[in-house]
Image (tube, rainbow, N blue to C red; front, side, top):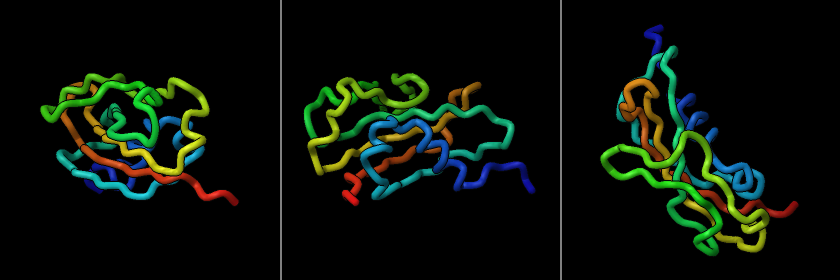
Length: 122
C-alpha cells in the first residue's frame, strides 16, 4: 500500500547476516528489535552482525562491533567463524547485535539483539 517494508522482512534481513555455523548448530531463542526508521521496498539495505557474547573462547568468531553512534566497523554480512567445530562442544548459546542501515545514506533502520541456544539432539 504505502511502499514500506513489512516488519517481518526486517527479521529476515537480520538473520541473513548470521554465521552459517551458528544457524546449523543453534536455534533462535530470543530476538529484540528496535525500529528507528522506515524503509521502502526499493531501498538497498546493509545487514550487519556483531558477536556480543559467546559460550567458549573469545577467538571463535571474528567480526567488528558497531558503536552506539551507528557507525559500523564491521563489513556487510555475516560474522566469520575462525576455527571450524569450535561451537560443537559447548551447550551455552551466543548473543549477537544487529544493525540494518540504508546502503546509500548509512541511516540506521533497525537495531537488534538475538540469543541463540544449542539445538537439542534428535
